[in-house]
Image 1: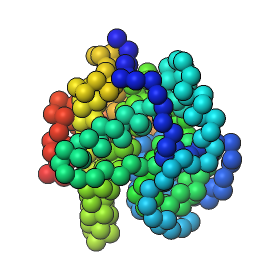
Image 2: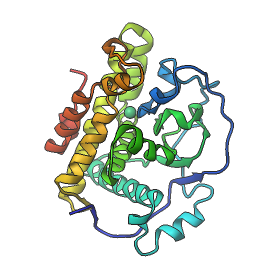
Image 3: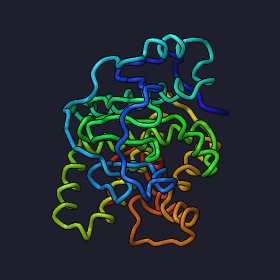
Length: 293
Ligand SMILES: [Zn+2]
């Protein structure tokens, strides 16, 4: 059936387009490469040896209004068929539907949802978490509450990890938005504190964070589907599940280093990621996402 949106309008509020601006990159060497193609969170905080931002300068608050360079995006994405044709327009549309669903859910609970920012970049970008390169893959930066995506990653996801299809991209966006929920809920702050006080538990806590973001992605998928915001069929769900599995630590380790070392996992196995996405998808309720048990 494909992916059906309830409407075709694309809203670029909160979006920054910094593609083609290069941008300063100050990233540590070894270990980035393909391993960095995890869906990364806590870029500067966890590091995990793969990212070494030179500074951690919280810049406070989500991105407000339209960011730089979005004029073209707004007009191009609001033409007939643009959402289907262009990756960036599709992603902004998914971002819109994510914000819509979570805004309603927060309101229902008597709370206020703050939208995350969304920045497209190429090569490298300065963030509230320091400088980051495309090699880390899409990520969320808690201090500036921004989601950062190099659209080239989506091609790599497809080519190197075999994660195909538009709904795989929607899952990625929903996962990053899941990290935003963790910031709004205060989970990220608590986990970061726990990791600092007990570094021996840092990886295990990171895995729980990532699996929870997968679960939140599943919850969004269910809610968006039930409400008709983004209707999908079985084939689309398989795309999301395929992507969740493709970025499992065991899959990536097997591919990049030829062996699997669970001690070093930061995101969880393919099976865990699939299971938690489906837990959220089945329940449609964030309370089902207690991955810290
Ligand atoms: Zn993540």
